Amino acid sequence: MKKYLINLSKYLGMCVLSMGISSHALADVIFSNFGPGYTYNVSSGNVVGDGFDGSIYSEGDSFAPIQNAVFGSLRIALSEVFPGSQGTSLTISLTADSGNAPGAVLESWLLAPGSLGLLGNNNAPVVLNSSLNLMLLAGTEYWITASLGGMGNAVAWNWNSIGDMNAHAINDGSGWFSPSGMTPGAFEVDSAASVPEPSTLALFGVAFAGIAARSRRKPRHPGAR
Image (cartoon, rainbow, N blue to C red):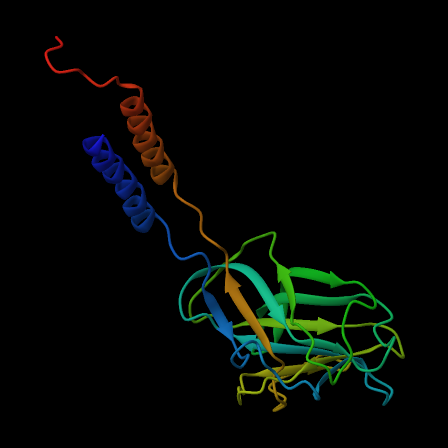
């Protein structure tokens, strides 16, 4: 029995070791300008939608991965400016860069009307998961943009609270103006969670097959042949 337990430990150890070799951490932060614990400026932000000055605004903030990574999810701090001001769907997009401004849309999400908390509250950042899992290239500039149509509809992209001043872009309907010099909104881009590679799964199969075979083997009594 003792020998069996030792061999079982060896099999399990092989499984753990193979996992460490063949897969990466579950998810890595590609970019973030949140403070500790996803903190941000709860009382101020850049207006998305009606600026109540005759213009409808879209906002964009840039980031550049420090290494190649598969895009997994976006976490973004958004709030209604006043109750009911998110009257239509809010569009959030990941875009390519075009002359230091947002360019071609790579992936988009729609946030239903009334889905955000009110400005001034410590609302949980919105989490948007990628279905395309695009490869983001190291050192390449990308943008996160937010737009909301219709007069009277206004959302705030809450400012970051750590002093990040990456390029920010604003569009009042006449095209993107960048860099605007405005404080970027708070957001985080995470890589996709990795899964065990086929070779790892195969090793698991071999290991557990060995465990099963050993558990079926009957112990030999002294003197038995």
